[in-house]
Structure formats: structure tokens, C-alpha cells
Amino acid sequence: MIEDKKVIFSGIKPSGNLTLGNYIGALKNWTILQHEYNCLFCVVDMHAITVRQDPAELRKKSKELLKLYIACGLDPEKNIMYIQSQVPAHAELGWILNCYTYVGEMGRMTQYKEKKAKQNENTTVGLFDYPVLMAADILLYQTDLVPVGDDQKQHVEITRDIAMRFNNLYSETFKIPEVYIPPVGARIMGLQNPTAKMSKSDDDENDCILLLDPIDAIARKIKRAVTDTEKEIRYTKEKPGIKNLLDIYMSCTNMNVKDAEARFTNCGYGEFKQEVADAVVSTIRPIQEKYKEIDADKEYLDKILKQNAERASSIANRTLGKVKKKIGFVV
Ligand code: ATP
Ligand code: LTN
Image 1 (cartoon, rainbow, N blue to C red):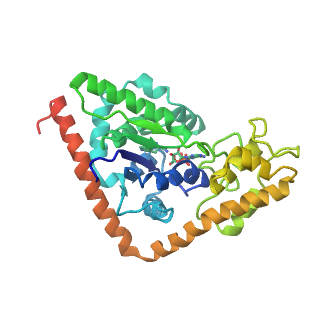
Image 2: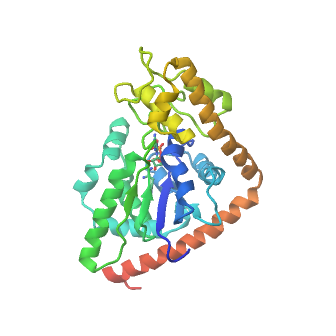
Image 3: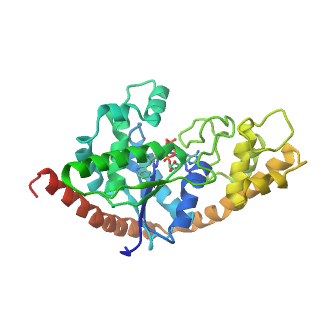
């Protein structure tokens, strides 16, 4: 890592197939930020098991996600890209920070409340405690900036609170991180239900576009997207379906709202959807091509996994060592 550069940490759960929402809200920004920062991009499999996963599928998806990181344009030589469970320091600091976090704080987390409400079975302590593990992820690397979609803002805020609490008790130990939310596309909504977030663990396959969807399926899903009974293409909260398609379009073309609205004046919904589909396909097609190349070279991925887990561990262990000393563990 280059000493004078600021540090970025972010991660995605290997809990399903990567969606266009994950790409626009997170990955796309990472590919831009990687040029200016020292970056760690993690496949957070320990977060994925907060809801039940099939073991073989989880292993497959973890590797697939790392390949997708590379296919989207992240450079594994320049950034540290690894699988969370291969760096034990995450679990160790996670436990320690549990003892500096209050039950009330976790109970207030919106994502926890939403996921709990959707579950019929017993909710695990892991799901409840998940933001503490996320805090450990971030704080281990003395992170300056955490680029995430809008839904993760609250978790970065609690990370800051935990870090400040620890620093106040034991002297300066952790850097206090800032959240980075993208200006466009921080919350891509479902195509069938544009009032709820597009999510990779959603059951309705028409609601989300997957990065590895067949190209014809992408166009089909966009054409079927729910809009409204009007005719006008305007960027407004009152038209959630159209607003969402415009967000997708703007992110894929790097266009601003004014230009995008002007582009579609007097344009019908059918033609608009076709343009959005073309923009999405132009974004996704090169990612799929690169993915195929990486997928064909099995040894390449294993080499990256091993090297990067070692690089991450050596940085993480420095922070963990300091923490253990400060709280009184025999080291
Ligand atoms: P799950 O459905 O399993 O909870 P998810 O699709 O919400 O998963 P995560 O792994 O939780 O995906 O998120 C990875 C990153 O993608 C985070 O930074 C998150 O904020 C971002 N992200 C997820 N969904 C969206 C979305 N619809 N729009 C913008 N960003 C998103
Ligand atoms: N909680 C995040 C994933 C995540 C993360 C992190 C993001 C785990 N650890 C650290 C940024 C930094 C999510 O559900 N998207």
C-alpha cells in the first residue's frame, strides 16, 4: 500500500447473484475510486451467513463474486481483494467490538428490522449483530472512506460511534471513517416494485437485472418494468418507475438529469425503455465478456485469493494487536 494515499474499504455479500443495483450503487464507484485511494474490496461471506446459505452454493458464489469484481474493472494487483473468512482478524475484532456496542443501538438498525420482519423462522443473533462485524471490517484497516449504497449509511454511522467510544476509553486507536454515497444511483429500485430496493436475495427474478443475466433477458425485463399511466418522462418522486429507469439510464451513460429529461421529451415509454435497455446492455456486455475470460483461468483466481488474504491479514493484524494490548489481553 502506498503510504500517503487515503484508505477505502467496502464489501458485498456473496448471498445471491450480483444485481445492477449493486453495480451502480457500489462497484461502479469503486472502479473510479481505485485510482486515487488504497482500496480493500472484500467478499463478505461472514455477513452472508447471517441468513441460511447452502454451503456449496456459498463457496461458489464467493469465488464468482471475486471474479465479478475483476470483470467490472477492479485491479487485483492494485487493490487488496479477498474473502473475509480467510482473514481471521475480522472475527476477532468483531467479538471485541461486541463488548463496546449496546443492544439498543443494534435494535434500531433499519436493515435488521426490515430483514427480521420478512423472516418467518427464528432470527439469529448474527443478523442482529451484523453491523458490529461491519464495523470491525472497516476499522481494522484504518479506513478513511466507505463507498456504499444508501441502505448502508446507518451502518457506517454506527461504526463511527463505536470507534469514537473505543478511542475515548483507550486513546486514539481507530481512524473515524466517512461514508461515500454516489451522487446518482445510490438506491436503484426493483423493476416490478419501484418503491422497494432492487435486491439480490429477492425472489422475483423480473424485479432485478443480474450482471450475469443473458443479454436478451435484460432487455425483456426493462420492457416489462412497471411505470405509470401517464406519458411524460420526468424525474420526480411522483413517478417512481420512470425515475428509477432514468437513474439507471443516467448511471449507465454518465448523463445528468437535465440532459436525460431533455433527451426524452416527446418520447413514448416504449422507445424510452428501449434506450434504457440499450444503455444497460452496453454497460453489462463488456463485464460479461471479461468474466468469461477470468472464469476460464482457474489458477489465476486461487493465486489472487491467497496473495490478497495475506496482504489484508498483515495490515489487519497491526490494528488488532494494538486493540488487544489496550484492552488488557496477554499478547
Ligand atoms: P441482500 O439482498 O442479500 O441483502 P443486497 O443486494 O442488498 O443483498 P449487499 O451485499 O447488501 O446487496 O450490498 C452490496 C453493496 O451494494 C452495498 O454497498 C449496497 O449499499 C449496494 N446496493 C445494494 N442494493 C442496491 C441498490 N438497489 N441500489 C444501490 N446500491 C445498492
Ligand atoms: N453490510 C454491507 C456489506 C458490508 C460492508 C462492510 C460494506 C460488510 N462489511 C464494510 C462496506 C464496508 C451490505 O449489506 N451491503
